[in-house]
Amino acid sequence: MTSEETVAEPAEQPGPPPEVARRVFGDRLPDAERYAELLAGVGVQRGLIGPREVPRIWERHLLNCAVLGEVVPEGVTVCDVGSGAGLPGIPLALVRPDLEITLLEPLLRRTRFLEEVVELLGLDHVSVLRGRAEEVLGTFTPVHVVTARAVAPLDRLAGWGVPLLRPYGQMLAIKGDTASEELKSARAALGKLGVVDTEVLTAGAGVVDPPATVVRVEAGESPGGVRFAAKRAKAARTSRRRRRQP
Image (cartoon, rainbow, N blue to C red; front, side):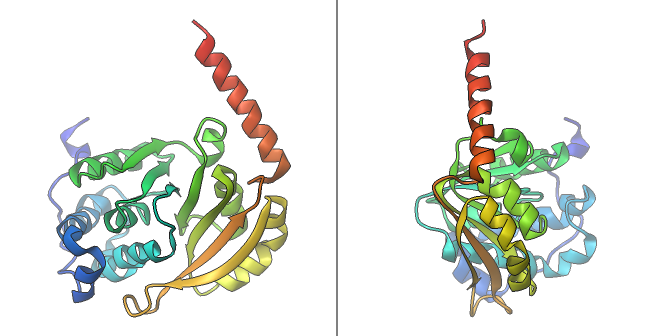
């Protein structure tokens, strides 16, 4: 890895954290500040976020993602699909050390950044996995919760995220003002994926303005539906055969 590819001092400054950040991040606030600096510096340099996002890193990105912790159950496994620059996975990890989080991201330059940040911040309960959701199906241990933010329309996102869930797991997707409309449009696709319940939640009231809008999608006994159950079984058999080969 070249010196240009490693985490370096930021070229931009995101500004001091708002007072509410201390309440949200607690004793991990210095790590949140370091992460904000990295996003503003090497994150911009590598094209992980746009330069126009730097002035609003705290409100629009770190705090907006950290409040997702309000709706994640205690002590569960989480997969952050299409993690990108680590949003929402890394802010969530900072406020919820009880979670076991996998940052799933297909692009090498992003996974390198994520690995560096995880090591730098000492996030021992976080791992980074390079790949697409549909590629790891069958070899990835299903999780209790899938998270995502600004990855894709809900119907497409559910096609990637729901099959990674354990039975009766849930996908939590941070969405914008069109969350209810997206959910309505995606109901037929969600039904085919074995989804049994949906709702639109808010998180971070009194912390971020406006609060984060979260679409919760709960899977049934067969996450992803019959087609994905067969695909998972086939991938698992293939994986077992490869492990037995000398």
